[in-house]
Image (tube, rainbow, N blue to C red; front, side, top):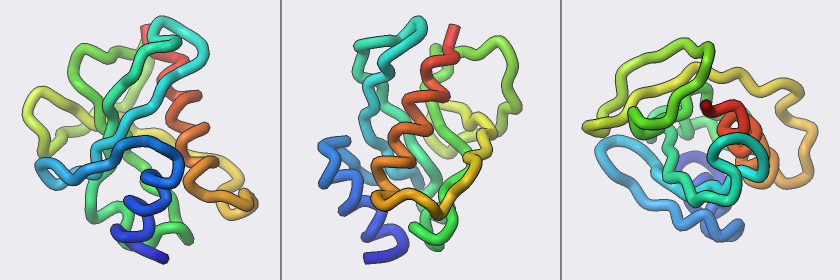
Length: 114
C-alpha cells in the first residue's frame, strides 16, 4: 500500500497506534535515549506529507509544545498546542521496512529532546 492508507497501515503493523487528527497522522513512539526515554510520546506528520509514502518520507515532525530541543527549526501545526519541527532523514529508500526506518528516525529525533 502507498500514500496515507499505506502509512497508517504500516504504523499499525508496528503497534504505533495511528489515527488521523486535525490534519495529522498521530501515532505513538517510545524513545530509548534522552529525556523522554521510556515514555510513550504522541507525535504526528501532516496527512499531505504522506501522499508519496513510502517513496518519500515526511519532513516535519509534529509534537506537543512541551517537547523541546536545544536547536530546531519550528513551524506551525494544524493541531492546537502542537508545533512542527523540521527534520531531514538521510539515506531514505534503502530500508527493507520503511515504517520501521521512519519510527527509528523519530525515536532518534526524540532522543535529542531536552
